[in-house]
Every structure is written in C-alpha cells, then in structure tokens.
Length: 102
Image (cartoon, rainbow, N blue to C red; front, side):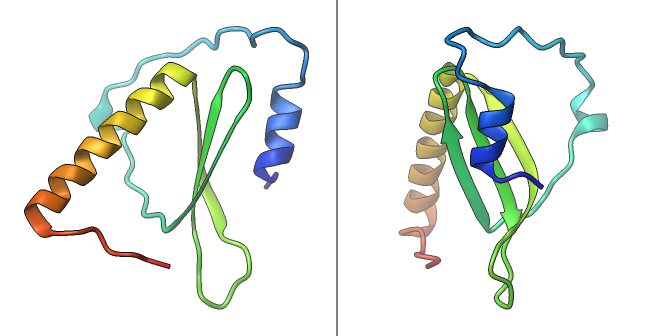
C-alpha cells in the first residue's frame, strides 16, 4: 500500500487546479456500512482535500496496517472536527477524562 505522502503526490499532483468532481452513487447505509476497529491513524491534506488513513497497529510490528482511507473536502473536514470535539465533550461529561493511549 502506498504511504500517505506518496498517495497525495500521485493522486493530487500540484497543478494548481481542483480535481474533477467524483461521480458518487448513493447506497442505503444499512447495506453499505461496515464497522472497522482502528488504533492507528494519520491525517494529510493538500489545497483541495483532506486524507484520513485508519489502521491497526500491533505491538510486535513496526508499521501499522492501513485498512481504510477516506478523502474529503476542507468544509467536511471542519465539520468532522467539530462533531468529534462535541462527542468527546459528551463522553467526558458522562464518563470522565478520556484516557491517554500512548
């Protein structure tokens, strides 16, 4: 699998132009949704997109195995940031401070 940096360079060459809009077909969430556990993630961005990589890290391996890559625009990245902040605040109100996993 490509590294995040290589993926960004290959997918979004520095042309100064926005990439063409992708054609997306909507599928019902119940049929298309899949839950995946992750304990490792990376976030990258360029002028047009944010790229989120999620994976699984194991104690005996050096690099995590990336299993999911999500790409979105800056407005949706901001919305995700705000929603995640709200969710963490609600969690901490109910259960106390979120733990440090490092």
